[in-house]
Length: 288
Image (cartoon, rainbow, N blue to C red; front, side, top):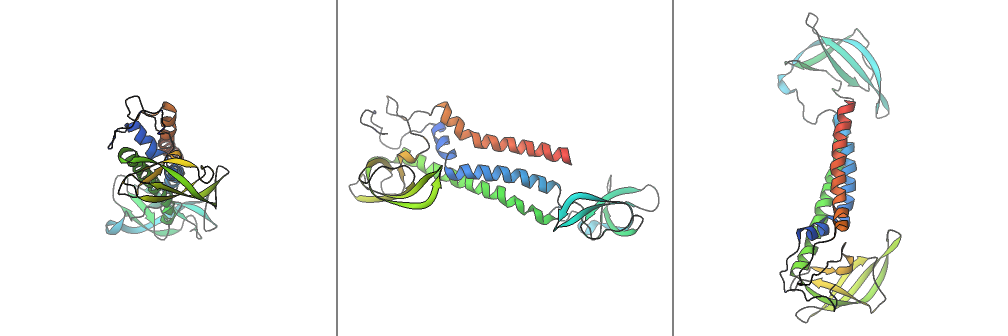
């Protein structure tokens, strides 16, 4: 595409079906890896966040201070820096009605019956924590795992941006034939296929000689030609056989929407991310 037997494309700007734009934006390799990293990272981060202290101190200057009495000390299944985390249950005040709260520590815990310094926020029920211990099994520092869903989101945005640029070239570009003049091996493989650094020479729409350098696993022998789309006066150039889908041209010369298969493949990663989000919420609710 385009071929001699194809209907001629209308001059730019051309209309692009929204489904074709979606496929181009969602099936970029950066976005694919972004969905994977982001989905897995989000599930892990939600679980870690459910068992770690908040980043912002919820007590502040409004906390009241006093003494509590330890009632139970028991080991948990968690470790921090190789040390076993222990759950410390305490009650306060000395008179009725008494309230019960839980603290966690990976240091030497106080013995049952010992008095410990505590602080609490009045409420119904009141919230309390032991001074020098944590209010959750893990420290707030484990929330660094949120960097992974953030990284994934960044890759998704970068992939969508790159896909949008490809769609823009189809909408506003001119089609020319480029000739392969150089192919250099790289150390990268995709699906057991060697990635090569390719150089194509072509004459743009205003008659100027240009070169396009891309990395791809798909190319022919030196001297082979391929279809390129470029926007005159801009650096936006696309090698059409590197697109995740070959755009189809209807009898009226307009781009046609993709079939259900390519669209379903494009929508699979965000759908899987939504399912992972729901499962993570259910998992956190079940183990809390």
